[in-house]
Image 1: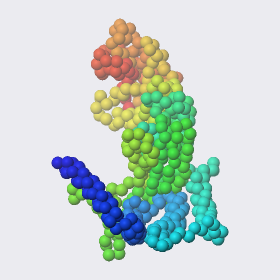
Image 2: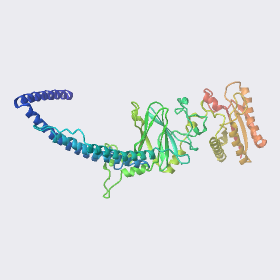
Image 3: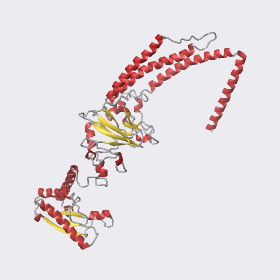
Image 4: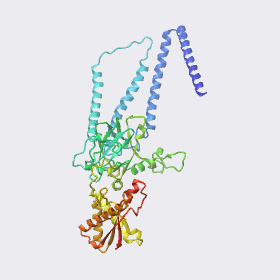
Amino acid sequence: MTVLLAILCIILLTVIVVQIGRVTELAAKIRGEEEIQEGANRRHGALSLLFMIVFLLGTIISAGYYKNSMLWYGPNHAASAHGGSLDYMFNVTLFFTGIVFVITHILLFYFAWKYRGEKGRKANFMPHDNRLEVVWTAIPAVVMTFLVVGGLDAWNEVMADVSPDEETLEVEATGFQFAWALRYPGEDGLLGTKNYQLINAINPLGQDWTDKKNLDDFQPSELVLPVNKQVRVRITARDVLHNFYLPHFRVKMDAVPGLPTYFVFTPTTTTEEYRKQLGALKADGTPKYPEWHELTDPNDPESPKRYENFNFELACAELCGSGHYAMRRIVRIVPQAEYDAWVGQQQSYYMSSIRNGEEDPWKDILFDSEIKERAAEFNDRVSKALSSGNAADKVLTLDHVSYEPGSAELTPLSRYQLDNLVSVMNNYPNMVVELSGHTDNTGDPESNMELSKQRAGKVSEYLASKGVAANRMSVVGYGQTRPIESNDTPEGQEKNRRTELRIITQ
C-alpha cells in the first residue's frame, strides 16, 4: 500500500508540474516574454543568495557537529609518532582550501545575483587583464609551493625506512580474501624467507622451512605491538589488491601481489590510555565526549560504555570482494612487559603445524628448545615417581625411545631421552631400575617376546656405555602380554610398542 501511494504521489506531482508549465506558457503569451524572463531572473538571483547562505551555514554547522565522528578531531588524535605530521599537513591544507572554498562560494552566487539579466543592461567583456592574471596565478602558486614542500617533508619523515643499526620490531601482514595473515619473528628477531611456490594448505604463507629463521616465527590471530617501540610492517598480498590501514596510527599502504611494500611507525598510546582519553571528564564531572559514554548496547543497561569497549583496528581500505568487511582485525597496543609476556605464550607455526610432518626437513634432529623441554619434562616425571608411595607411579614410559622397524636398533633421536636417563641415574646413585620392552600383537608372540627383550637390552647397553653400573639395571621383555591400549587401531598399536622404566630402589 505504501509503495502504491508513493507511485500515485509521483504521478500527481508530475501532472502538477506539467500543468504549471502550461499555465506559465499561457501567462507568457498574455504578459510578454521579456517581463516573464526578467521576473525569473530576479527570483533566481534571490534564490542564489538564499542557497549561498543556507549552504554555507549547513557546511559550517555540519562540520562542527560531525568534527569528532567524521572529521576525526576531538579525542581522535593520532596514536603514532608520525601521525602529528600528517594531521598538521591536512589541517594546513584544510585551512587554505577552506578559505578558497568560502570565497569562491560567495563570489559564485553573489555574481549570479549581481549580474542577473535586466532590461537595458549590457555585458562588459574583459578579454585580458595582466594584473588579474598575475594575482590569481601567483597566489595559488605560492600557497601550493608551501603545501607541496610541507607535504614532501612529511612524506620523507613518514616513509623513511629503518637503518640496519636501528632497534626495530619487524612484523609481516599478508592480505588475502578475506583476512590478514600476521607473522612475527621469534627469539632470533628475524623473519624467515618465503617462496610463493611453497604455498599450500598447511603452509599458507609459503615459508621455506630449510631457512632456520622461519622455525621460531609465529602467526597470532591479533596484532599486538609494544608502545613506544619502532615497528616495521612488511605488507604483501596473496591474491588481489588489498590495503593495510591503521586509521588511529595514520598508517595506510597498499598490499600488492608480487610487490612487497612496507610501513614504519611507532605507537605512542596504549589501548588503555586511548580508552581513558575517550572517557575523559570535564572539571564539573560531565563527559568531555558524551558520544563515547553511550552504551554499546542501548537495549542492555549493563553493557559497557563505548569508550570502555574501544579497540584500535586493522582494516582493508580496498574493495577486495564481497567479504571485504571480514578483514577487520583487533589491534592491541600494550606496555613492553605485557608484550613480552604475550610473546612468551605464542608457539611457532613450525612447531605447532609442521614439526615431524611430511614437509619437515629437520626430522632427524632435535632443536635446543626441544632438548631442554624434554629434559625438564622427564626430570619432573622422575621427581613425582620418587616422591610417590604408589607402586604404579614408579613405572615410567620412555616416550621418546624408539627403534628401527622390526629391529632392536635404537633410532638416532632416542639418545636424547637416554641421555636424560643417564643424568637421572647419576643424580640418584642408589637408584636401581628395571628396563622392560613391550610390543604390539603383530607377528609371532615368541618372536615379539624376544624382540622386546633385545630392545630393553639395547637401552641397558647404551646406559652402560655412559658409565651406569650394570648391577643397577635389570632387563626383561614382556612382548605383547601387557598392552596399555587396544591393538585394534594403529594408534593403539603404536602406544603398545614401548620401553618402560620401573624404579625398584631409590
